[in-house]
Image (tube, rainbow, N blue to C red; front, side, top):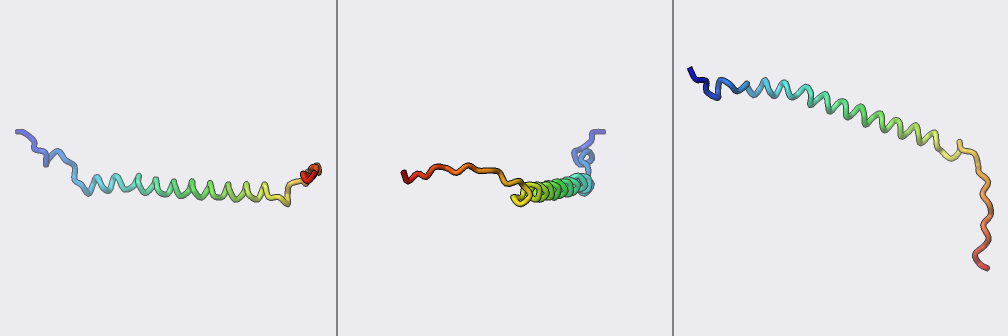
Length: 66
């Protein structure tokens, strides 16, 4: 008894349901990574703000007027 292609193909709704879970999981993981990177950027900005760094002595440059 030969099998036709209708019997071998899995139903589309099942494939869609199986593919949806990893897709949504990937979206949530990407959002979490983006949020973490933004938080790290804000922390590094606070860390390297000018008012918390020491004032370095800067030599006076000779004037270029001659």
